[in-house]
Image (tube, rainbow, N blue to C red; front, side, top):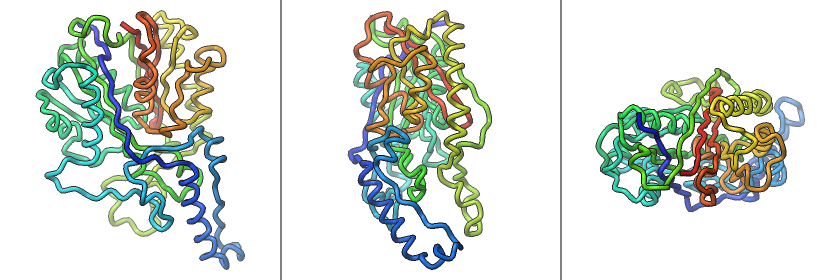
Length: 373
């Protein structure tokens, strides 16, 4: 069966950057209004007052300094505190498909081949705009691609699950080339009134093209050495938004209709799970993990990424070995590891080896070892 290569990647970054300082200004204005309006109940102990935040707290807790968002105005309004994204008609290109198409066009331009060479489209993301029709089919139509398309959701691990699926399609002959897109409008699923999580996510879209190695341009792209997936059920990261939301009594189950997590439990359980998975997969492939030139990890939290990097490399990573784009993009769910790969891989020489890895809700994790052709 033919081997698969990652032939090209693409990136779409929204035009609006929102800094920690701006986010905190809005959050603290909300806190002040809440505490003033409920001063009597707070003093009597009937309810608990809210605690202000700070840019320093956010950066220390996460490594995040700013994030890109599709709408900034609503997030800076202390009375609204959610993105303002006007609903479009069914005849218009949907917002999620629109940013996916932008990332796909970037990847296609770097690939240097026409969209007609694509045989399948996978939309792998954590926050789908709707149940159906599949976002992937809408992207397929917008780009004029034949073949088939479908959506898949494995939360923050969706991109590595998508890469493995694309590689398997190529290896089996189901498609000669596959386009995978990861559009993420995470701001629409985040509770901007929660001090512990309002700063975590940003919006973005990424894309990757996987094709047969024997049809790839000479020396271009990345050989996929091996892929591995793992899931293990956990409630510690959850988003219950779905078709049963309408009609629920006020206050019943409302808190878990947006992103919620038990951050400390996630850290304790996911870091060892992912670190062991990487080391074991490397051993099975005959790869020395301490010799990897670069790690492109899911951009979850700088403390998680640094600890995984130390466990995999057996030492503190040198500058540039463990790519961090959290400071500029924040956590972008499924797209994070692809952004890191897209932005920090051009300096690789033939034969250099690296790892694309993602992990998140589920729990789920995926590893993709690659070597520069």
